[in-house]
Image (cartoon, rainbow, N blue to C red; front, top):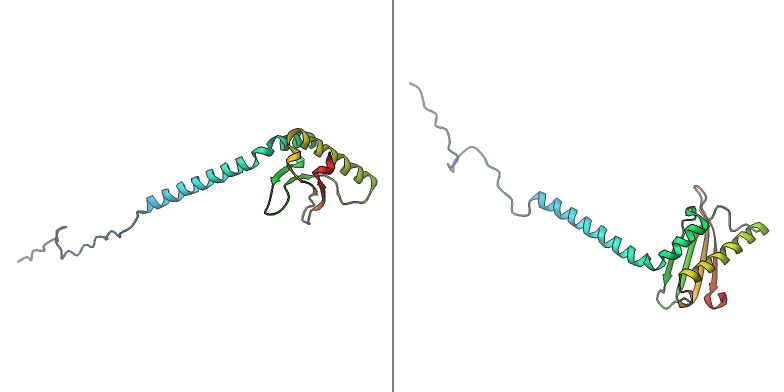
Length: 158
C-alpha cells in the first residue's frame, strides 16, 4: 500500500508555497527614474540661471581673457545688494604678489587697473554702476592667497 501524496495546487489557500505579497507604493524602477529626472531638471535649472546671470558680463570677461591670458581666470560680477550702491567687481589672478611694496609691483598694478577700466568702458556700461572693485589675487599653493583690493567710485574714473 502506497500512500498518495497530494501536491498543493497554486490556487489552494492552504498552500505551503508562500508567494511574496506586493507592498503598496511606487515600484523601485519608477523611483530611480524620478531621481534621474529630478537631477536633470535641477542641473538644467542651474545652468540656465548661471547662463543668464553671467551673460551681461561675458564680453568683458572675454576681453580680459584675451588681454591678460586665460591663466588670469577673470571673473566679472555686477549688480546691487540690498541698500548698497551698484557695483562692478572684477577678479583677476596674477603671477606676482600684488601686496608687495616695490616700485615694479606698483607699476604693474597701476597698468592692470588702467587696462581693466579701459576694457570695462569698452565692453560694459560703466556709468550704470556707482562703485568699481578690482581684486588682484596671487594664489599660493597650500597657503592663503595674496590679494589686493582696489575700490573706486565710478564718478572718479571719468
